[in-house]
Length: 327
Image (cartoon, rainbow, N blue to C red; front, side):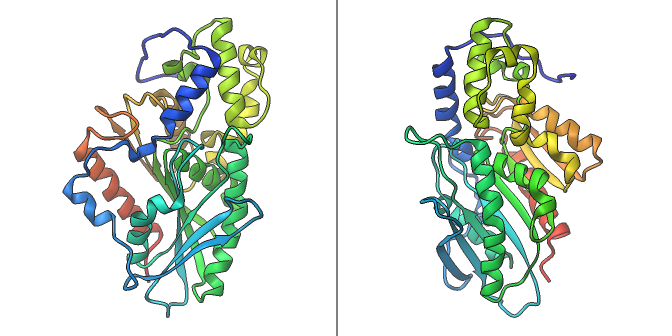
């Protein structure tokens, strides 16, 4: 696959150090931004009863983390509503739906039913993976739709979105599971979520090196993410890609090619920029209505390209209006 950006080769890091650095860094999510510019205030709203009704910590499964918050707009007399699910960041190891309350309040203030969903985080005490987390989101969505309908808000379409780790899970749901959703998934958006796992693209962790150390490190990191054992030999012969496919959102675009708005930082040292290019290619190849924003001066926090950040948010708002019009 052609690459538009060339990364300088680096020495492979030790296996567990590579995994630790990745997970800790990813935990910063897109929350690593500095002080937000003034224009961002329009996309973050403090929750109040004037906006609607908040139903917190509704269960969708037996796990301790299997809870969601449902934001119901004040206008309760419509025949149908659009649902926007926003999944939290946190490197698959931290974070909480409450951290996105201002974003969810903004969505609700626009007339959408909005939902934040928690999922089981990977810790030293469990082996949660991106795969198990994605399956929890798949199980949660019908419960979210049912809860909205039980409250008198019938849902006829939905958008799924998120930041960083939440963006990865949102894309997996939209492309992999969207055809099985209880209502049509008509749009997905987010930023800096990993969507592909070609090891040559993960050079920021030294996984692109043709050495045994690099192959062992790649096997360790990708095993933790995929929730299945991957060996250094499978890394070497490329067969590991089939085991990564269930969580590689770019590989599923053809299954449900929904409109998409995404953003990636060229200098991202957590989710390597090169790993976003297969997603861009898949969107192009499947004739998806999409906008792909490159942040030329930014890393994982997208913090150094204010003008592009604004264009990205305006595109999100435009796509919401186009595919999720509030009636």
